Length: 92
Image 1: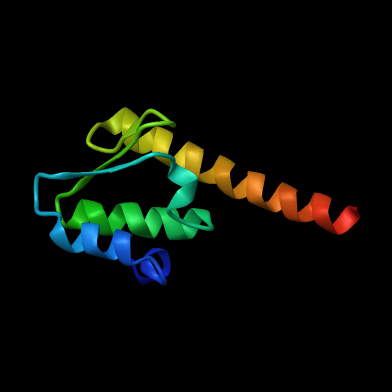
Image 2: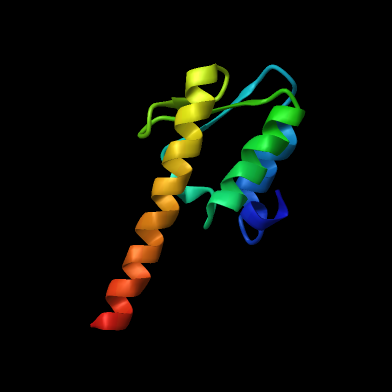
């Protein structure tokens, strides 16, 4: 999780405090990582620790099979949105 925690002491502290069976709640998925790989690594690390993840804005709950699937879809869309912003900025 080092990529998502870098320079983010609040997130680091929350992650250290989480125990198995607990859930990390975030406002929006795209606030946690810059790429699909970052987000998948982040979710994988939480899963290995037995910690769930809920994104309030995106209606994601990784404690369910459908929530994990939707997490992957939303992670891909978040990366595409960032890449489109970069393309538009370069074209301007």
